[in-house]
Length: 553
Image 1 (cartoon, rainbow, N blue to C red):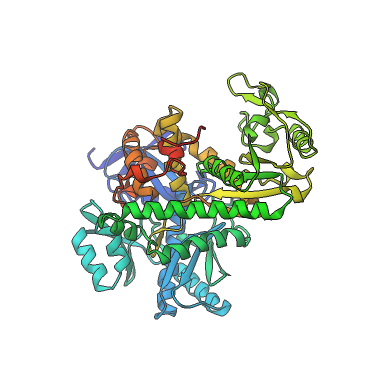
Image 2 (cartoon, one colour):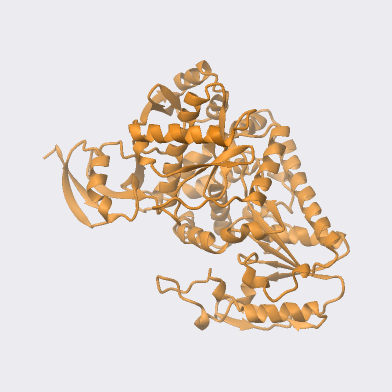
């Protein structure tokens, strides 16, 4: 029958008949019991669909809950829309801006105004009121120039700057009663889905705290991240000074032919920051061990090499060491919950050998360092002997560098810890942040293809386990760093687009990763391309991913 659909449900492996044009939300409510946390969207034939959509044809249906990054992003988007509307209603003369991710939440500010604790209590109360009202989020598809006219009428200049360069002929606007806004990505059906959040005052603004993949069913305790906030804030202030706060700003600079100047400014900023870190290490007078840690594709390898050059300028003899060479032999590798070797665990490292080697070097003894053979899973020694002098400084790079277990047997005065990450402070516009994880997965995809023989599909398949490893082994220790280095380059997405797009287009709709590839393609479409590759220095962080680096990896 033409009015009956055959839908295969991924989670239960059942084929169920439903009437044509059935609301996806209705099916989600039937199958919520099969998912560990609240369903916020669906995946139909490997493409993300909002719950407010209907089904028009046969296919395979799965659901997205808060155990996935997609689910958390969708939940977060609904939360930001509620905060936007609530702030307009109770602070009509104040303009709220979404800034950046900060711990288990999103940091927001009001332009030119710092809210008090009581102001934020009123904001939260209003948000809860809107949640209880179960107001629907209604999507309207407008022709691009009709949407731009609407934004111009309401003085939403940031939206105009973002969207006027976009090639797509239509733009989706979300309505919340009489309020509207543009949001990049999918949305929950209504306000009642966003029933778990907090509003916490931080610095001059506040953090919207929400569930995440490590805490999908309860609100995580918000732990202030002072050093992370400073790293973001410093870069945000620099962006404001040079007029580079949003994707629209970047596109304007590119369209005006000023991309070469922007590249040089960004690279000089990195050089200045790395030089400052080297000077800080030098001023300590006692540091013998520098630990560089950060999540995947943060650029920590290139950073450690550039820092080593700056330390040489300051008269040191830096010696690079990779924690990967301290893996235990494969038969001793701990197993994860899935029964497979867990190479991300700190127990996969021989901490006793690392401590012994480092302390011997601190005490002036010559040490032959190990080299791990990844093909055989065995430790080898190939004559890599370090003969320390009073100028020797060890520069160690690895994901566990900030874990206190790494340094518990060392004199703290000898150790300097650095957290490296691509802390993207540039936003798409005033209400849409750019997730740092998106920048990193795009970097990694390009590097995996160029240097590891991996397709974009393979990178996308590995990414969820990489992210869970970061949540467990890296992010809990980031505030233990002496300093944070922000490896993000405000121009980089306009460069990376040229390399990533052809790779993403190879991911077809026969795989579950298709939805992620499609999302990233749509994301990169916001940016005009920069093709001035010749001006990017051979020592740039970006060269680690696109190639032609001065350094060997």
